[in-house]
Length: 213
Image (cartoon, rainbow, N blue to C red; front, top):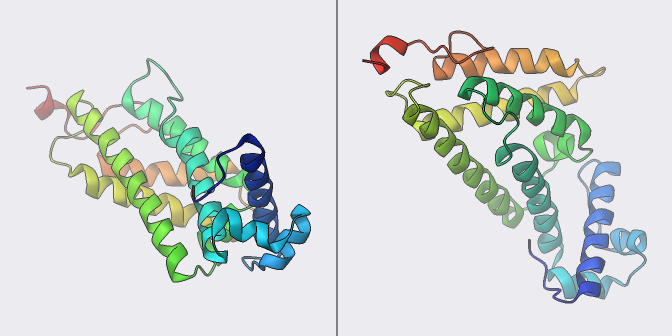
């Protein structure tokens, strides 16, 4: 996160500014004015620049915070310890949809937020990191013999995360939103097809025989 504060008080102020910036973006549908954020947080405009250098720095910190929370709650947590790969990842898919449905910033960040170039670079870096994590997850399924070995892990990761992002953005844009379980069902069909999983509720993939030879 692009925060220069080091003291406990400074970190608390930065967190308050992030919350105010997030509320500003949500309420104004992707538009952020530094003066308005300062009023919301009850601080001077100068304090924002002291913590984040610029408007781009503040926006970038909001983006990093969003993706950091998604990483902790969805990407790196284990939703089903001891379960097979497909069962665990199906539940991870459920968590991903639930996170975005509960996150007020998600509709803005996934579809309507027109990022400045400097912020777009930060978002691209975060997404690239998530692809790295997902690729290692695919590779772990291959090492365990639960996914076909002819998959390119990074290609598979990019396709699944890209698909998740677009499907969730489409669902969030609808009024009313479709039930989460419907979104998960459609999304998991897509993921299972990419990864060669025959039974979305289990780990039976399309090439079991050849892998187990």
